[in-house]
Structure formats: C-alpha cells, structure tokens
Image 1: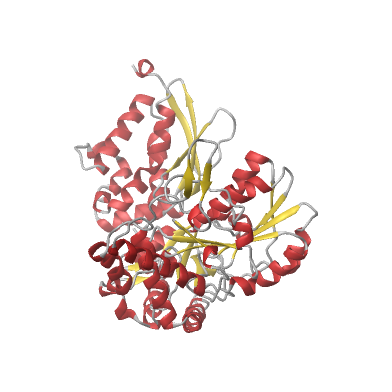
Image 2: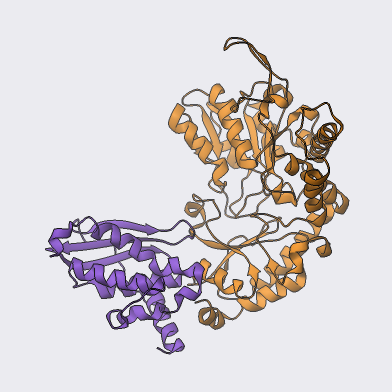
Length: 398
Length: 145
C-alpha cells in the first residue's frame, strides 16, 4: 500500500528491515525541509513571528502524540532522542531514586538491550535484582508466568509491547491490571509496536511508555517518554541547563520549570519533532487498524510459504506482528543476508540486540524479515523464490 | 586460480572446518576475535612452545568467509615459528588490502585474492588474524631472531 509516498522505494530495493527503522514518506521529508527553509528559529524563545510559528508546530506534534496514544494530559508527553533515551531516563531519573537494594524488577530474555542494560546498571550500582519471567513454548509472556515470578519485593515489570525478534504482542493490559493490584510499576517499551498496532495508554493503564519516531515513518533522533502525570512529576531531570529552568540565583536557589519543559533541557531536535508530527498525521490517515490487518495478511502469506521449505527453521511461526525470524539449516544467517543483498533485498542477520534470547530459543543468530504496510505480496514471492534453492544460496553467498 | 575451485575450497573449509576444538589443556592460550561491524565471533586456542606454533584450535559462530579463513589460516600457521607466522600474516593482509604480496607464500589463503572487491567482506577474511596477532604480539621481538 501507499508505495508511491516513499522516495526510497523509487530505487530497486526490497526493504524488509522495518524492525530496525522504517522508510520515510515524502511528506515527512518535506516537513523537515519546511522548518529549515521557512521558520528555522529556536523554540520557546523569541518574541518574533517565526519563533512563534516554531512553538506552534513543535507543540502541535506533542498534541498529535497525546492523541495518538490517548494520553490524558499534554504534559505527559516528553520528547527525547528515542526509545533508548526514554528508558534510560525513567530508570535513572525515577527508579534509581525509588528502588532499594533487593527490590526486584521483572523483565524477560527476549527484551531489547535498551530494556535490559539500564536495569543491569541499576543492579550493579544499587543491588536491585533483575529477574526473568519465563517464556512459554512459543516464547510468549503469559499472565500466569508473570504471577509466578511476583514476590513481595517485586516493584517493577518492564516489558516490550511487541518484541523485536519473536514479534509477540504481550498482554500488557492484563499484566498492568494485576501488577497494580500488587503496587508494582509497569514500564513498556513500545518501539516495535508504536507504528503497527493501536496504543491506548489509559486503557492499558501503563505507568511509563517509551517509543521512537523513526520506527513509525518519522525521523531518527526523536522519541517519546510517556508517563502518568503524577509519576512524571517525580522524575529527576538528568540533563540540566537551558529551557528547563525557571530561574536561578545561586546554587541554592534554582527553580525548574513545570512538565514537560523540565525534562527537555537544551535545544531539542526541532526539525525532527516537527516532522514527526507529519508522520503521525500520515499514519492516522492510513489508519493503524488498516496497517495491522494488512501486516497480518502479509505475514501469513510469508509463513505459509516458508513453512513448506524443508531446510528453513522458523523461530516464530505463531505471532501477530510483522516480524518473521528464521534460519536456513547449516548456513550462517549473515551469509544468507549477503546473498539476498545481491538481489537488493534488505534483511537483518544477527542477534538483533536481544543477546540473552539465545538462552531461550537455542540459537544466537537469525535472519529477520520485518514487514510494513508498503511491502507487497510480490516482494514476498521474490524472497521465497530466492530462499527455496539451497544450492543457489551456497553458490552465490560468497 | 579458477573461481569455481576457489568457491569449492571456501565451502569445503566452511562446511568441514579443520582444527575445531577448545584446546585440550592450559598450555593453550585463548583469544577472542570479533569485529564491531558484524556478528562473527571466534575463539582461538593457541599452543606455542619455544617460538614454535605447535597447535591452534578454534570455536565459535561465524560466516562462511570467516570460518573458512580461520580454518585455512590455522592449517598454514601450525608448525611455523613466530617470525614465519608474522610473515605469513603480513603477506595475507597485504593481499586483502591491495598491496604487494607474494602469491607463493599463501597456500590456500590465495582463495581470498579477490575479496577486496567486496568491501563488506574484507573484515570477514581477516577476522581470525585479529585474534592471532593479539597473541603473537605478546612475544618480544628479540626472540624472533
């Protein structure tokens, strides 16, 4: 769908690495240029027309994000550089102050590094415990397994909404409901879900949510931290400086601004944030339900074909997202990726930043095809044809 | 060398790598070889006695080029003195980096003669050399004489 909107697709490429980043539609690129050409001033500063225009555009994106995830208040939307920064901000700026040694955080072995390493850091620095919710036979998280791992010391459950290798959609709403009955905070890494399925933070009732613009047709270098207002009020700013202070006389008299400015120090990625607004409007126009449904059809089409190839080991046959992970028996994933590259097909090989997942699925490296709405059934046919001839792969991969 | 023969040699060393193992005892020094831009990861186990490379074994997960290159490198280095090994390594790296090199010293290493044409695979061919150099460089120069 909508392939004509994407200048990158004018090249002769098949892009199947949408889990890493998505392509950008022309309207997002144009909006970036529009800022630099028409009103390229700083935000929250000047008393002149173009600076006022910058503020309007910048804050319009905040409003669009608020509506996109159905947040209650505008000040619950904090712009960051991406999911990674959002998660670090919440772990370092909130949980580092709140948690005591021996408090427990629950994650899983299929989390992305960004939802693992900040917690490891806290474990090493403060002596908190990081425990793993066991995954079921499909490598899914179930509420039952979450319940089994909860102890009186459990304070946080931090999970991806959709994981980047297995592609499972987690039952976040059920988990959050149970967690809150036990006074446990729920942090969600929505990097892989935000451009693919609907997110309603009030319905899910999550405490914090992190995501990136570039995985939903937006620019790189822009992300969001959502937090419930009453919790965000207690997040300590990790970056101090311009834009976030109200006034200061000496070291004892510093007054910070209210949310969200307090957590957005320095000149932000203005062009990125403004262009991000265009990306949200673009996705809204297509409709997330339409996107989800189409991706499901693409995925089923691909799985039905791959499953018939005897030398393909599928890691995630069942899964509702557009992520398909597999290996060709006895051929290293990177060699297959090189082979496909010769036909201008972009897929990802490796551990996909989920380095402890190998303990769960038994393989370290895999090939990952991650689909988006601009992929087509014809592209999948091309891929499958190239993968169904093992002799050809061995011959041409070198 | 004919392209098809090169491909056959590489595939043979990839599918049946020689000297796979974990080093039998603590006379083997272990060193890791990896590079940032790819997912290859190889451990080398090296046994050196009196300036002579007695044995090398390797283990790990890597692509066809890295695995075969490791297998071929090991076959060529076992039995060499440290000075001879350094000469072999230097000559191999010259080939990959499009400098002058001596074809006659390379044995099966010559199969990577054209690897410079694929920029993203040069680091695969040289991957095991990153590790072995770390070990050989710990031997002082004067002992090479």
